[in-house]
Image (cartoon, rainbow, N blue to C red; front, side):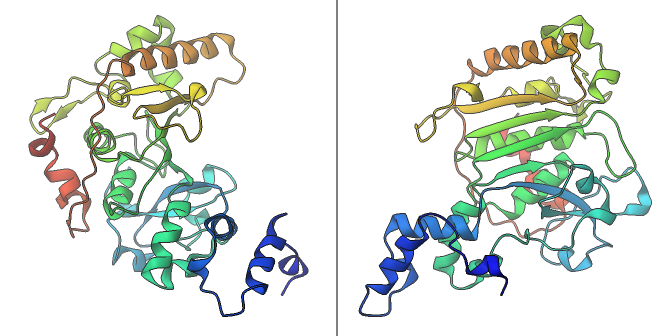
Length: 327
């Protein structure tokens, strides 16, 4: 055991020792006081930013047996993909399959604790799924993750969703059909969501007429994609309007532990790089989106489902969207 492993994990660690040592009988972990149990869980699942990355099934075929797979790769040779959860050094480590670790859980998490008994799994779930989670690969990857994590204990509270306007070697441009379905799920079925960030990649600046102003970009029908035809009908919303379907407020006005049905929303745009005009546009766009979100009703209602299909395009998350929501 390393020296660091023998040191107190936090300033409160002596409290843990005191509680255990004063017990005359063996004490079950789950019988510890709630405050002590909370500190143990935080040590086992320390707060981090987790990224849900896409990875070709051919790289980790063992994942394909238990996870939902999807097909988005601009290069057909990459084939079908699934997702993997990592704590990368940079975002680029999420985009190159050669740099993505084969481990499903980050090394700093005590994943074995989840497999002890079902009670431990449910106890740890709120600490694991309460992490900040970024969906960096594609809307399909986010849908696949959500499809596999839709039980009651899978309470995601803080997410970031990356939008790409153009393709790269490892990442396809955002698919309008998948983006729409993703926000159908988030807006209608995730009542535990508290914070949502939209992260727009830097290709936005080259692919749009952003100089025309934030309001015009928000209402521009085909913003960043040419084909909005879904299932034979036109989708009237662009990608910004789908995000604005949440009932929301600014993340800057959020008060921790204060109940609020509204989403705390924030916008981040890559590629500003100190450009004052781009910075002004980003601020104006966020404020305009918030003005639209303030007029929206609260629509979220928990739905857990029982679909066992592991190909996204054949799953309930893809095929039944229109008949469920009629939107």
